[in-house]
Image (cartoon, rainbow, N blue to C red; front, top):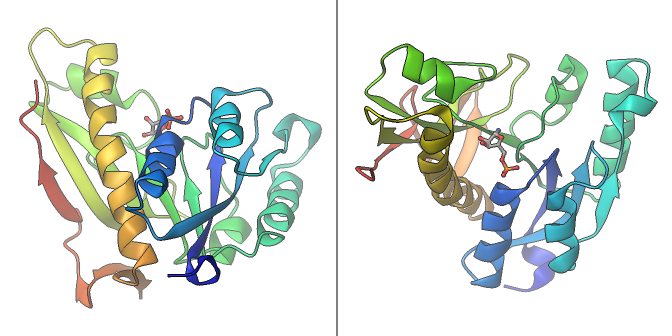
Length: 221
Ligand code: GRF
């Protein structure tokens, strides 16, 4: 496949970018038919920007603190994203609540990864909340982004055991290893034309996925 046919991906980050790294590694290993055309961070100086630069991906920083209103920031961000003419926008630890205008603009072509078995534990501090709720399994979900925060249709979910002596840090590490498996998988499905969103549902190879998405079960302890 020539590079002009590859799915053009813009990745949005706010921090460490370990999920970004998993995508970069997938491209390097020739496992992902994508071209990462830009990485944009809303926070200056984060590790994810370094990871992108090392992989020769163009980087941009758009600091949300320079904007008085969420709408203005989101519009400026849309302008930046669209200048790269992406086919897919990947939110990889992008810690922003998005306006409806923004989510509508990229409906069906924007993915997010959320560290819980959605619809459980939307929002923040998911690992701690899962432990406190006495969950025996916890995990991570990749989903299409809609106007509803952490509420778009699920694509793939990976679950891991919650161990008796887990704290939020140990549990988050176990979950993150699965993040780095399922995000490249979902991006690959999209890039190969196997994944789309139709009438609010995630479709894989022409079939609707279950509400929890494709399931991956890990027994890693
Ligand atoms: C991940 O845990 C992801 O699930 C959440 O934000 C974190 C980002 O981590 N949305 P990283 O920046 O990819 O390392």
